[in-house]
Amino acid sequence: MANDTSNLSKSHHTYLSNLPSKEALTSTYLHTPISQLRTPAFVVDRAIVRRNCTRMLRAAGKSRMSFRAHVKTHKTTEGTRFQLSPTTDGADEDQLPLRSHAIIVSTLMEAWEVLRSGLVDDGTVNDILYGLPVSVTKIPEIHSLRTQLAVKGATLRLIVDHPAQVDGLNAFTREQKDGGYMNDEKTPSQQMEWSVFVKVDPGYNFLMTHLLASSSTISVYGFYCHAGHSYSSTSLPEATTYFTTEVDTVIEAVRITNSLRSSTPPPNPILYVLSVGSTPTAHVSAAFKASEVPGTLELHAGNYIFHDLQQLATSLIESRDIAFRVIASVVSLYPGRGAEGVDEAMVDVGGLGMSKDVGPIKGWGKVVGVLKDGPSSMAVADWLMNENTGWTLSRISQEHGILSNDLTSLMGKSGVSDSNPSMRLNVGDKVAIIGQHACLVAASQLWYYVVDSDVPGVDGESVGEKVVDVWVPWKGW
Picture 1 (tube, rainbow, N blue to C red):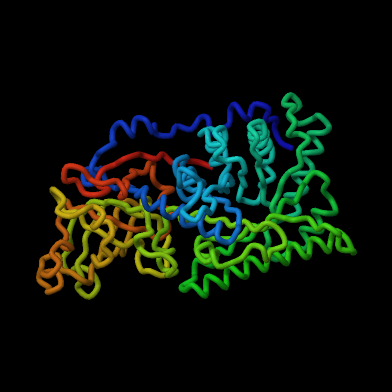
Picture 2 (cartoon, helix red, strand yellow; picture 1 turned 120 degrees about the vertical axis):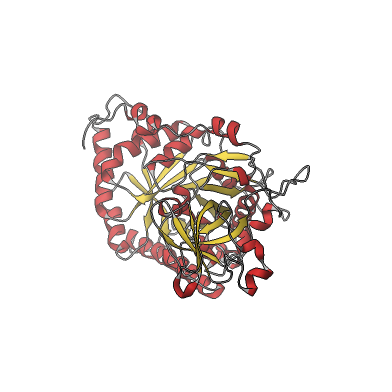
C-alpha cells in the first residue's frame, strides 16, 4: 500500500471544504419572492420532492421490496431525509412502510458529508453503499470511513466488478492483520469483512469464481444491476421489459454463485440482497412481486427526487412531477433572427448552469414559465408549470444561452402571440427552465432555493412564491 494515512480521518479534505453557510443563506433569502432572486437561480419545490419520494417508497412497499435511495442527484442532507422518510409517521394511508435507512453515494465525499451531517447519528442512515467500483488507491480512505461508521453502528458496503479490486481489498486486510498499515489505529473494524455487492455485468461468472476461491475477508452481500439504458424507455411496457431483465439478471447471478459454491446445492442457500433499479424502471416496479425472488429484492433509484426532461421523455412521469426550475433573466432580444425567421432571446444561463446533456426532447432545456418584469400577474405555481410557452433553450455557451420560439413573435405580429401575450418576452423578464438532466444541472449549483407549493400564500401572495428554505449541496469527490 501507499503512504501512511493514520491521520486521514482528521485531515481528509472534506473537513477542509468551504461550503456556503446554510444559516447565512437562510437568513439572507428566507421569504424572498422568486421574482427577486439573482439569476441564474436553481429553485426546488419541496412539495413535489415530498410527493416524488412518497410515491417511490410506496412503489417499493407495494412490491414488498426494500429501498435504497441514491443521493447523487441532490447531494444534500435535506433531500436525503425526504428520500428516506417523506412522511412524519413513516407510513402511508394504506399503512405501507414509507421509510428506509439505506443509501447509495457516488463519491466518498458524499459519504463523509452524510457522516458529518448527523444523518448517521440520528439513525436516518445506517447503511451506505459506495456506488462506484472500488478504486484500489482509495482503500485506506474507505477503511477509515467504514471505521468511523462502524463506531456509530452503520455499515459501509462496496461494489466490485473486477478481480483486481478483490485482490486490493484482500491485500489491505492482510496488512492490517500483520499490524503494518495504520498500526496506531486499532479498531474492531480491522477484523470486519468487507461487505460487497457484485455488479452484474458480462464476466461476473469469472469474478465470482475468483471471489469465492481467493477471499476470506470479503462477504458477498448481494448482486447489483443498474439498467442505465432504461432511460431510453418511451412507454410503460418498454420500461417493464427493462425492469424484468434486471431482475432476471440478478436471479441468474444467484444461481451461478450457488452452483460455484458446491456441486451439491446446499440445503439452505444463502439469501443475497438483489439490488435493481433506475428511475424509469422503478416507476413500474409496483406491479412486481418480490416474493418471486430467491432473496431480498432491493430497489434503488435517485433521479426521481427532482425528475427532468429526460425522465419526461420516457412518458412515465408528467411535467408536474419535475421539482426543479432554473430561473434565468432575459438580457437581449433578436426578433426573427433564428432559423426560418423564428424569434430568439438571450438569457444569463449557459452550459455551466444547465449542463450540456441532451435527450429525446430537443434542446438543452424547456421554458415552462415566463415571469414578466415587475409585479407578478399570475400564481407562481402557474408560471412554473406552463408547458406551452414555445420557448426552447436551443443553443448554449459557457455562461449564456439562446432561446428560440416557434409559437410566438416577440413583436406581437402573429395571431398566436396576440392571443397569448404573456408568452412574449421583454428584456428584464425571467423565465423558468426545466433542464435535460437534473443530476448535472444540480451539481453546478452552489445552493438551491426551496419553495413549497403546498404552503398557502398569505396577504395575496401566490402559492409557492417565496423562499422557505435553502439547501447547500455537498461538493467534491
